[in-house]
Image (cartoon, rainbow, N blue to C red; front, side, top):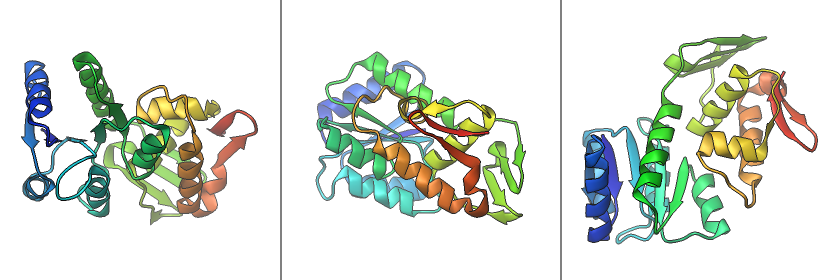
Length: 219
């Protein structure tokens, strides 16, 4: 189930029609209040959020989703006419998983949705490195046996580097793999998420190594 929060009726109808044509189940909402009520009743598999909305903006709605235990890791794509670098960074740093600027093509939208859903499906492997244990299928991360709570992007970065131990990931590559697109602007958002990931992993934070001038890896 996909929830779409978009106040422009023509865009809302277009997106709903396009997604349903591919076999996806989707429900559209005009107002944030309607969207929130639906989320509280049934959690979707993915949310598409516009930014410029009545009642409150999409960033505020996104922060509301991230503040809830049941939707903290919900895959979210921002759909908005705002396409500046600042707007993209603000959206990503607020917890968005992807960002598509209007106008967008049907095929691109569907491709981004499918890519994000694939990335959020947990793998079957388990990883154990020193005192760090990660079970992707159960979304479990522990350090010295104590549970660690990560955001979706932090969790995905950790799993990606564990799955490819020894491989160095550039900031651009991490943005492409985790956020789902080639991002050629400011990439400080990766550094911010790496920093918080290391902090949350406590004594195991040192496992996330910085390769100067290139990026990051777990050796």
